[in-house]
Amino acid sequence: MVTQANRNLTDASADASAATSNPAATPGVGGPHVAFPRGNMPERKARMTAATTNGAATEKIGFRDVDVFYGGKKAIQDITLSIPKNTIFAIIGPANSGKTTLLKCINRTIDFITSARVQGDVAVDGVSVSRMRNVFALRRRIGMVFPLPVGLPMSIYDNVAYGPRMSGMRRGAELDALVEKCLRQSALWDEVKDRLHMLGTKLSGGQQQRLTLARALSLRPEILCLDEFSIAIDPVTTMKIEDVLLELKNEMTIVLVTNLVQQAHRLSDYTAFLNDSRLIEVDRTEKIFSEPAQQLTHDYVSGHFG
Ligand SMILES: Nc1ncnc2c1ncn2[C@@H]1O[C@H](COP(=O)(O)OP(=O)(O)OP(=O)(O)O)[C@@H](O)[C@H]1O
Ligand SMILES: [Mg+2]
Image 1: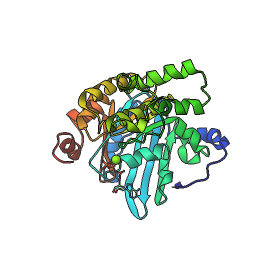
Image 2: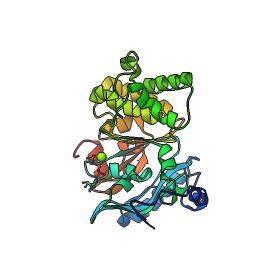
Image 3: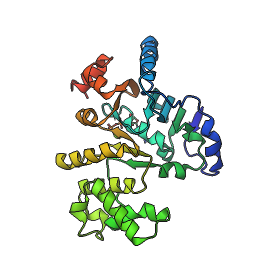
Image 4: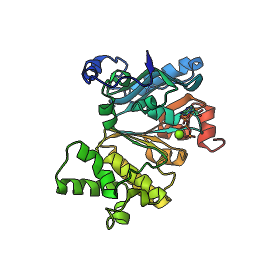
């Protein structure tokens, strides 16, 4: 299937009818499908068998044979992987390996890039995102935090309250409580509680980054995609947010793109390693860091390149 960027955004009814259309999204898979370059199929088969025997995790996000092109350039090549529900799933890899591109396919923000073309299938809860006509509904289910903060030109309070208000939350006390909760979860509350009506854009870069996280959390997303969220945040604050993420995975599925391999090691249940637009290896995080199947993975996680 070919998914063209810039699709029409109408007719939510297709979402429901597509719900049963993806046979590949199989609840009961105990770990992610494991994708290796096509030359390595016997190993892939062996690993997939192992992954299906050890539990009953439900797939939240599935990539099947996904390629992404920007114009004529391939940014993602033949990626198949399965992200189980209620896990922290790390995506690691050197610069330009395709990590951010992969995230953008999940909520279809890739559609904003006119030169982008997606092939293959990306599914959320078994529904192909390319078949979802109501892309706004999809994006409401997915919180996305990119490395450069994008504060809305409004107060700190309104930055967080904006989404819930748009979704119909009107009561002041309820909104107040939600804003406080999200700012606490983003480790920002103590720094801003006395100036909630100050412009969000006047905060420091690291504070704006956390404000973006609070805004993403305010809609209680099913999926939280974090792209190098701690790039501008000091280590102590980063640890506080990491603690919150470990709690949040009970409520949502977290996809964590990080250049800090030790952050992936500390936090995630599964790790996928991308290099040069390909998925080199995906497995339980402890396996990736203790005995990866691929030499390239070993070299990357032990800091030999990237
Ligand atoms: N909007 C775009 N137009 C054209 N090419 C792009 C665009 N965005 C990304 N690319 C290219 O696609 C490839 C993958 O980029 P991507 O941003 O997904 O990598 P990344 O792994 O997130 O890198 P980084 O660690 O530097 O953030 C790179 O070669 C990049 O130059
Ligand atoms: Mg990136």
